[in-house]
Image (tube, rainbow, N blue to C red; front, side, top):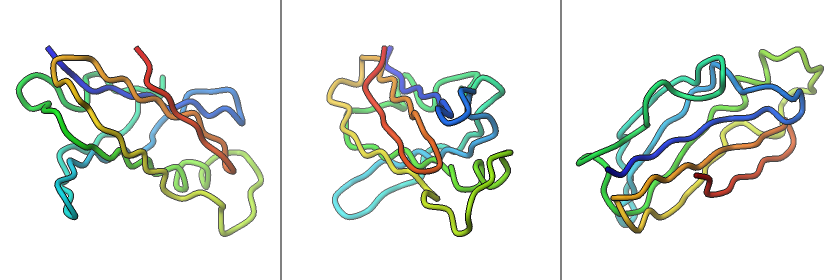
Length: 117
């Protein structure tokens, strides 16, 4: 059964990115449809996949992470306006039977991602 999961690591502070709002969109041509919205838990993850089973189909997806709100409420002394607000990761899931894990490693000034397991 295929599924999509993610997690967020705040690499500036060396902690999980908790209470970050994440939207998942399915992209078709020039349009996109919101299919899930979740908030990360204390471990920077979700208690269940963003999407799984028959709801998870091959195609193009966009993960949108609200890191601006997260860092605004962090103990870091940041200048306003912040450099990053929303981080968008656009990717293609070619096989809906596989597990796609797309983590976000983020600081107030940079981010990276990879296809995890």
